[in-house]
Length: 214
Image 1 (cartoon, rainbow, N blue to C red):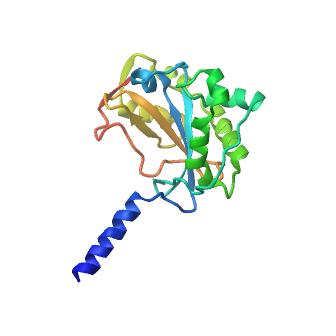
Image 2 (tube, one colour):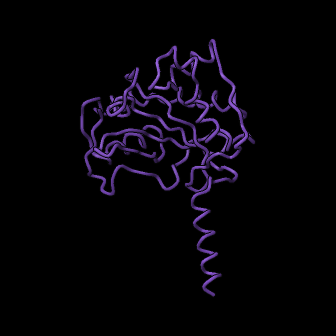
Image 3 (cartoon, rainbow, N blue to C red):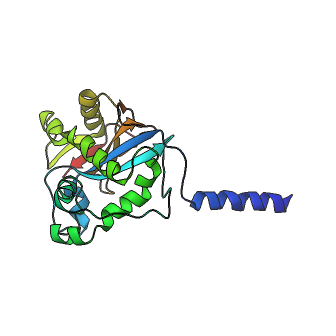
């Protein structure tokens, strides 16, 4: 009996360490606020608008990872690079370095993009993220509600602002010092409709918790 329990426990442990696979049922566009991201990092550039962190296929609130370990990434140049570099930049690198070293995009595609390859190949995956980003002027939405850089607001206010304009519940992520770091907007499987983020994250358990928009 002990051996059986031990084997089961070990199997569960291995599963916890393994990458998560499955058929995705929603997508999450994760938008990053560069000022907060770069506060404790050596960034080569800090845009004054939200940029893309990633487009993540989810299943029942779980982010799928590394669905095809053998996948390869194809580098881009010209207009494709320019568009990606503008809206989905690697903040750690200069523009010139980003053209030469596209590791950030390669990482996002291999870890997340491979998990929606039954609908979107590599090119369509990146193009979709850029199209979805164009649909949301999050900074203007915040500004219209008095949420401007260098100001502090409750979690409830930020969530309500996004729900009022976009009609869905977002994911909010903060730094350990309670600065707004990322906003996740969720879509159905083919990204044709906005949906509430499943088991949405917030920056605290209390809606009246104050967070800083750097």
